[in-house]
Length: 119
Image 1: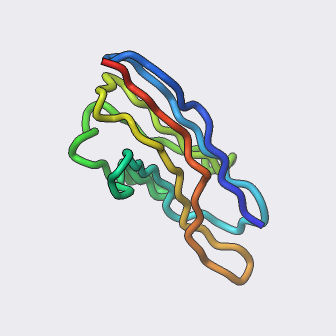
Image 2: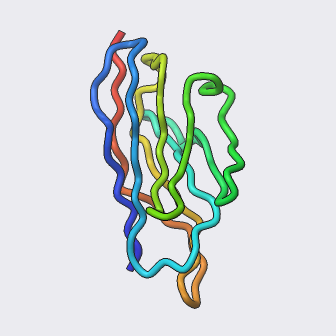
């Protein structure tokens, strides 16, 4: 059984910062890509940022220069540092991991954490 548990969401004023964390646990052999996605009310779930196990990163244009994704491979944890937050960043943020168990490779999601940015 694999679990992804997110933390760090909350309410912040525009211009502020938040740091999200997501820890993967369970019978994990290896993790390839970890990432963050977000879903605003009434919208589809969109990519925010991803990071490979080698440290290569990819960002949505809307967050480039403001958000930084990082990971600790030893802890199976991915982070999202969010600076200069805007009201349009308000969404539920979901952690994602492309990981391999002993015989299975799969795509796993966390339960989501709410980020609300007030103007």
